[in-house]
Amino acid sequence: MVISDHFVVSYSFGKKEEKSMDAATLTRMVAQDAALRRRQRLQPAGGKGDKIFPPTYPGEGRNNPPPRHVFERRRLDGKEVWCVLVDSVQSQANRLEESLLGIIRDKSLCIPYVVVDFSGKGLEGIRTISSLEAPHRVYDAIFRDSLLDGTPFMKSDLGKRLVKASNADASVLLEVSPTALLFGSWHSTGGGGGLGAKFARCLVSEIMAADVPVEELVNQRTGEVEPRTAGRRTGSRIDPLGILRKVEVYKGEDGGWDVTEAGAGPRAKKVRPSEINHGNIAPSVQPLGITCDYLEQMFVLSFAALRRLHFGSDEKKNEAGRALLAALGLVAIAEQDAQGYALRSRCNLVCEGKAPLEVVHADGTTVDIVLDSAEARDLYRATFAAAKGAGFNFQESPLLLTPQDKLVNIVKQSQDKALAGEGGEDEDAQG
Image (cartoon, rainbow, N blue to C red; front, side, top):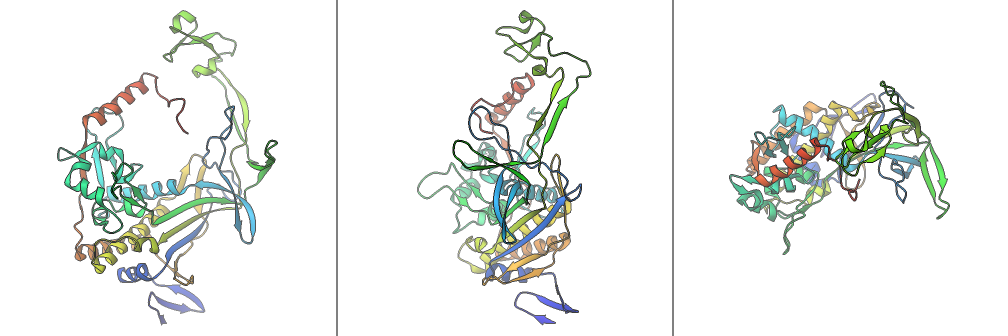
């Protein structure tokens, strides 16, 4: 048995087996090492070679170009291959936060967070919005437009502390909403004079598909090679009512329709039945969907980024706060593994074996560690207790805000318009 500064490592028949780490070990890792990483291979739930459908993004150029996947050339195993983005850094952050929110709701761990309670406000389908769901986390407009004990949140004593938070002292964020430090946040409406809290993400995760068959098209105008998936998606619909395309239908400006122009209302236009969601839709084929050799999730928890965060001048407190954030990141990735990788329709993935976590030392050398979901939770509990002992005053129950009337009203108006058939984005909205 070899005892190192970081781990107790045992050897069995020449194979290295890593022992689970404790809070003290994690604290030393954050203080001394570069990062914790993992490269987890994935495959479609249908098996290797099954078609999956990554997200699509608006095409570039004029004349309403069709949606497309995001292609990249990456160097893997000594060669350049076409890859496709399957889950972006931003999307993965949302999924990891969702995993943590599940733990919060089943009360397995004490993870501080902020929540706006919309119950009793007459809104359909909206009860609460938490800082793990809002796009800009604790600095989101949803919270800025809510009240803490009757005071606009950012004008309350706690809100003022959040505005002033910085890398020199991020204590208030750790105590109230630590995910804002782990996944990054920015108070984009903060004032001048050095204000406007901004924190870079310490945890990055991304899923990409490797070695994707493509059609390399040459842009006749620029001469550049533009990749397009070799996969195809078909679409069609047979109307059970048998409504034919030649039937005359008029659609009014309010979204209503009739078989007569007068019945459809002012400024009615003649349309096809398919434009009012009736009739057949002719079969179509689009270049969408991919196959690949494998998929890979690349997860990096940067200890160097954590060391940029300070919680005052007490170094023991700094170490305890950073270790807590590291443990929170480990809980998030372990929970995502446990819950699975059903990313979206026809994009359900499963792990191809279990990849180890690697501790990356300052000199680039690595050592594997083994950590399951239960051990990650125990590690978080230990670091949370240590952080409390170091002097942090955590918000151990949800910090409850109430929405301002103007916020409720704007949501209510949006819902009313949607129910009246006036939904949809403006023509200049970005996709």
